[in-house]
Amino acid sequence: MIYYLPFVFLFGIWFSYWCYQGWMLSHRSGHYAPMITALPRLLRWGVGCLVARVFVGRVTINGWENVANCKGRLIITPKHVSIKDAALVAKLARTYKLRFLIAINQTKGLRGPPLAWMGAISVGYDKNNPALAGANAAKAAVEAMTAETDSILVIFPEGALDRENKLVRERYRPGFVRIGKGCQKVSEQQWFAIPVDVQYHLFGATVTFGVPIAFAHLPDDEKLATDHLFDVMVQMRAGGV
Image (cartoon, rainbow, N blue to C red; front, side, top):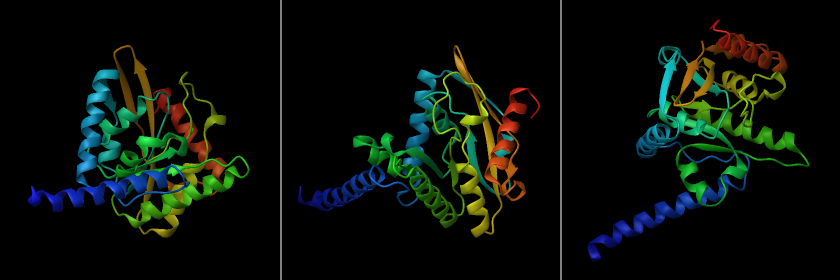
């Protein structure tokens, strides 16, 4: 029995560390833990495949080559239709190093530690100063992504579910532009946004990856840059991309 004590001790340290990271994730906007290792990436992929199979069904993927062949760093910007989107992201991300932005109220309690373990960056909300909370999260995302050399960021530009799955310009927020432009300024790598459309069917879903959009070529004006992403999404829905 005594031979197991070192392992129990090490597991206790590991468990306590991630409990602390989960607590920080749920209490500070912009908090993130060190980059996820192979084990949580494999677990994320396995759980994502299982949950997607049970609750989504068959997933048809269009335009995956736009991700696989892109020679640069990626910020994935999917349409946010359902809570099932999380399963699709986990399934399609495979074992890529992935970070994702998540509302701080979604990290409370037991959800915090595994989310921190899998690469989450919390986005808080301060009713007295909402811009500051968002700025902290954007700054943290830039710091995390530029400190790493091969990770991918997922951010839902709408910031909230759109269960009707309609394209409405007013719902699109400029956070992805702020992060992408910030990364481009402090990194020698090229950064791209990849728009993603999601359509759920009775027994499955279709996920379409658009052509990468270089942040270096987007206007510095956040509104105009967001307009461009929205226009691309409209073209994708119309079958033009």
